[in-house]
Length: 342
Image 1 (cartoon, rainbow, N blue to C red):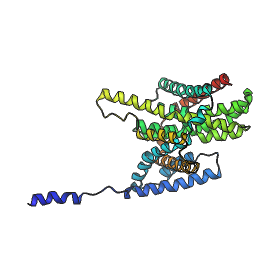
Image 2: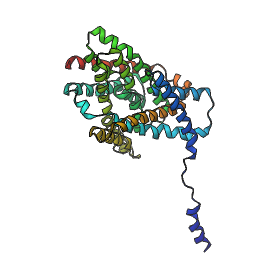
Image 3: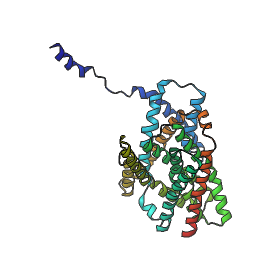
Image 4: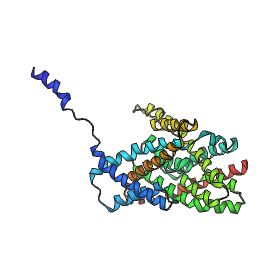
């Protein structure tokens, strides 16, 4: 009888999961998001994601962080990041991309596929590890930090320094492209439309494309953003291919196989479909854009807070060299495509 009573009472003493351990880290991320969005509002040319990741790195390296923040930071770096990528899909309308014309769509595909392939090959010749190469390749060829985050969600690298390095390189080289593309477009005699096509096809972050399009002027901003969003749309098929390759490789090793397509990628596709069908009101799209930016900023802050600067210094010059090569390749493919379709 005593044994039976003990068995009956066991479920009553079982502790339920709680979010309490997450609260300190989530609160810290929320504070960082507010600061990042405020600075971005005052200086629009500076991405909130860049501000957030710098804040995280400064905090980690200048202030001793209590272990109480770890659970919330880890949650933000993974879960909130993926949710932000899902909401990114609401910013895309397939009809706008198709309206660019078949020639421009082919150029976008060539930029993404060619950029990724060339970056992976060059990085291999440099002796850089596969995960670091893939993070840089997708970040530079698709959509900057969001693409790096998506790859992180699919391959789940053991070393977060690789993720932060890729994001830092996206920020550095994308920012350099803001003045360089308009200057080069003027030197090449490109009109505002063609210069906008080139900016959207070559610059890494959406915010950086907006800044460059504004510098070019003359209607370049609109076409630049649409071309950039066409590259963002390539996020889903690229992540699906990466996931499929990982499944095939894990099948040969007998390890746990990853899903055919990560759930957050399915969510991203669903959001694109809803927006493209006109189901989502514009007001909700605007709110979702703010929430998406805040979620990604929280994730960037958490990633930055997990990295020590001395570890970044140890990566050496190779990733920087690869980033420079990737920038040149992507910009070259985009420019060649613009010349062909113009």
